[in-house]
Image (cartoon, rainbow, N blue to C red; front, side, top):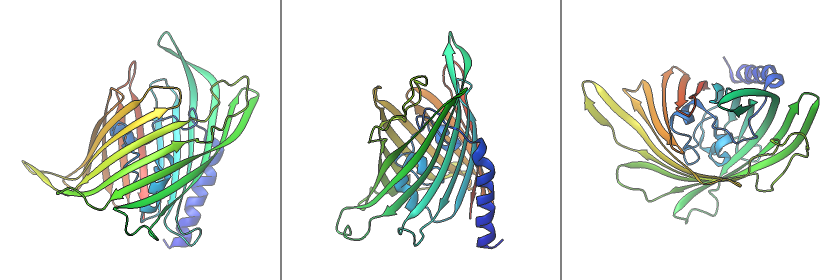
Length: 308
């Protein structure tokens, strides 16, 4: 399959999905089966097709075209659909471009009983990221910057509101790293710094999420042999501090490890909730599953990722 056919195939998938794609509290959701299994600690990692959502600065780290589709069920019974596409460095603005579409039904919880409110929220976003090499060679770290523009729509019965917002991302990569460490990353995302709002008296939930998220990631350069034919490699340790506007600080921790060069195992904690996940690579495909053990019910996400 040549590159032109692949691009047409991806565009066809996008146009088929767009009419049915809608989103959750406008980017205030934990997105990604892989990320769910790591407790949502991903802003400092940002190395797959969901990066346009988590931290657009990481887009220029990707070397291949990537496509991901995600389906999830949150503890409040709201359904999530997510589609992401990344196109590596092009002549257009000299960076890497990413696209995502996100959907979630809005559900209200009363007396631990979920009740669908009939609200659907839609976010379509295009993001851009670039390595800032020129003029920064003398700095003790590599610097990547990025941003995304989000088009928002929310609807309840016959009432529909629209708006726009943006996120800004930074990613620092210290050049002097610890022994046994392959890479260290420090990420930051400013969500909706312009405080864009959607004018709607009836839809109180219709506002883009604002706040900031700091992330820290360590990629280990060691293999660990546990005996009995079990080898761990590509070990990642990550931590996030998330501060949504008007809410208390949320802390997340996560880890990912590659088992016998075939399977992924993940675990983490998301503001006190335990998270677990797994994944498998077969050819150009990667299938991931993650669960966050929320109260009163767990949240599940499963995704398929194509890389070429």
